[in-house]
Each structure stands twice: as C-alpha cells, then as structure tokens.
Length: 132
Image 1 (cartoon, helix red, strand yellow):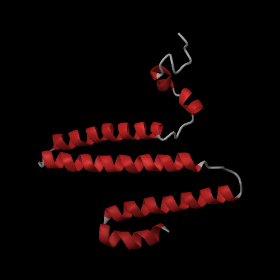
Image 2: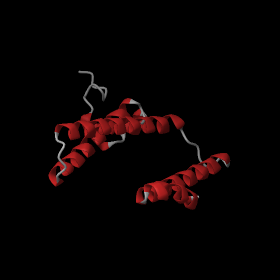
Image 3: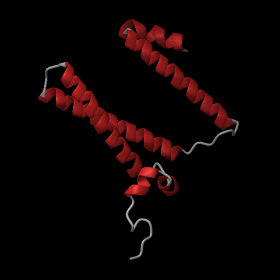
Image 4: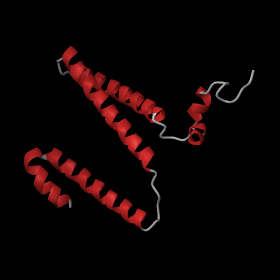
C-alpha cells in the first residue's frame, strides 16, 4: 500500500510525498484493523467523542492557518526569530483552541472531567455542590 502511494506522490511532491504516503498507509491500515476488531466485537467505539475531537482538530487547523496568514501579512520578513515566535505562538493558540473546543463539545463525560486534576482546581464551590 505504501509503495502505491509512494509511486503516486513522490514524483510530484518529493520528500513531502513520501511523508504523506507513509501517513496515508498507516491511516488505512489502522482503520482496517479497527473495522476488523469491531466486526469481531473485540472493541466498541463511541463515535460522538471521535467526531467531536476531529471537529475540534479541524477548527484548530483553520484558526492556525488564519493566524499564519495574518502574521505573514503584518511581518512579511522571514527571519529566525519571527519564525520561532510564529511557531511558539501557534502552539499556544492551537492548544488553547483545541482544549476549549474539546470541553465545549462535551467530548468528555462529567465523570471523566471530574477525574482530571486541573479541573478539580478550576471548579467553583457552586459546581461542587456547596450550598452556602
């Protein structure tokens, strides 16, 4: 399978084509393995959290793309420090967008949220059932 994708992508995309071919081959093999395991009833997948996670990743990608476009428009010169700034701020912005969306789209159940140590600190007294 990887050879097929390499044959298609490497002539036009060079090393990026080889990387894309590898990712595609692994993705297809993973999906086939999951389908086989589901067919044999060895695993059960909840689709809503998976779809919502993929939705969050898509929105995060769009936000980072807009950010990069704006960053390059404001500061069009490519220097090491600007690229470093852009990369570091992209990680922060992307991570923030992803975390907010994952929690807003209810990927995690309330019980799973309660088990996260950071969430325990953020919850208010009212959220914990304080009646005072």
